[in-house]
Length: 101
Ligand SMILES: [Zn+2]
Image (cartoon, rainbow, N blue to C red; front, side, top):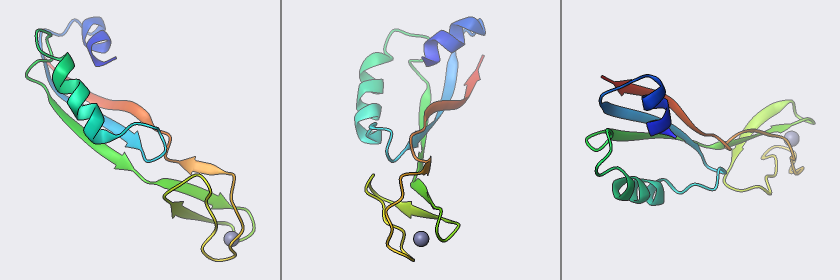
């Protein structure tokens, strides 16, 4: 994904890739780093640094009109204990920015 963007921007080199990964995105940051190390040799991103911002999952409670964080999909509001089906954040899997030359 990053390499495609870099090509579009006609970059000669990718220096830094900033990612945002949600807790419920299904992506494990350590596994991603590992895969990244395996993928970049021989590409214009081979010296690029990878930074990962982890986003906690946040849900909305319609009863209490408040957001709360939860570790899993079966999120219960800490105030009223009702389960919330409204995920507000945590599924992110995106490149927030790249530093290229
Ligand atoms: Zn609530």
